[in-house]
Length: 443
Image 1 (cartoon, rainbow, N blue to C red):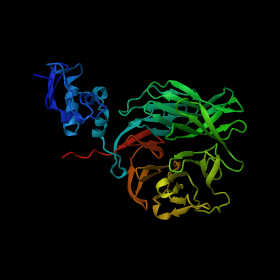
Image 2 (cartoon, rainbow, N blue to C red):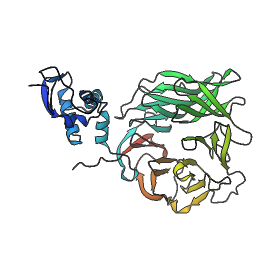
Image 3 (cartoon, rainbow, N blue to C red):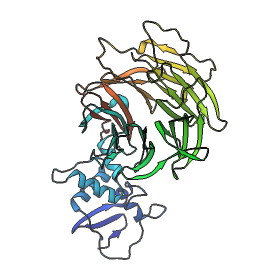
Image 4 (cartoon, one colour):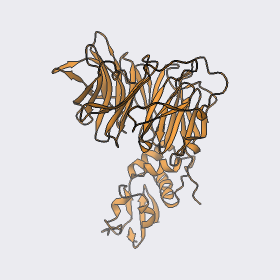
């Protein structure tokens, strides 16, 4: 019998015969192993052989993946190791199908706790960053531990006693890490590393007056046109925000800090595509006052700014602990230590914070050593961490619609969203949680 006859296709996989249809195979997509069997109009390519199409791979895994393409549902028999199945799925180019079947499209109101991972260094977890493919990295002091989407740890990245300040994923294979300068060594700054091997690919250096300067790199962010941004503190006047090319690693710009303002100590950077500007936020308690600004690198101009300098301090003090720009509503959302949300209009030159007391969620006594709240915006939903839970706000009025809480691990010191997962890092037990949206049932 022919390997391909009309709409039917037969494979010999590791000695076992499988028969399916072109419709099933087309579900794998153009960029898959099976997509190569079709022409540009999705018609099966003619075959010159009278035998079945032979593939020298694992037949048990092939059966699972073929059933996934038929039904959209994933069933893994006990005898098939999940790691082996994922390796085979990667060979056929259908790993995204496996991931999509294991958890659904991200929705903050439907998240469920999937699992928790205990870190190797209790008590000093400082940051967690979600990767684009469902993995993550966790900073512990001078170490960065990297996990793939199956939560298998890759070789850790050791910065030799230089404390990590931030980390960010350029893509699934590349991590940028910022660190403190170590006095007397010239070390510090930033480097781009392989996420799979931990190998340093290149250092991101700061040059002033044609001289390489040592510096401390802080908050990180990236733009869609392959630029890396980082807050920088040098030993003399190298305070500000540096810009590097993601491809070459070369410095391409630097926005110097002006007197009376703060850029080099920034806690938060965020690139705004619609404004073609960079949000820079330096927040309490890193500084006695808060400074939030939008920088236009084309004109070397600060186009919008706000600070609480001169604001009256009351008993019910509302210090800004995090900030995030919301381009869709031309506003910036801020949060204080009570998880009150505040909003500022980017269209107003004399912006002030409009606090929303209805979002005050704390009840009872705060923990003795609470972590400061963090904000994130994802797919039209706003997320705010406070103590041991994360609140989800939805709709144009940012109504509280759900809360995520795990009973152990202590306060959440950081969280991150990416790869259709939410990762939450706890401070006390250095454990991080993985929250996923259950897949939609196929009827």
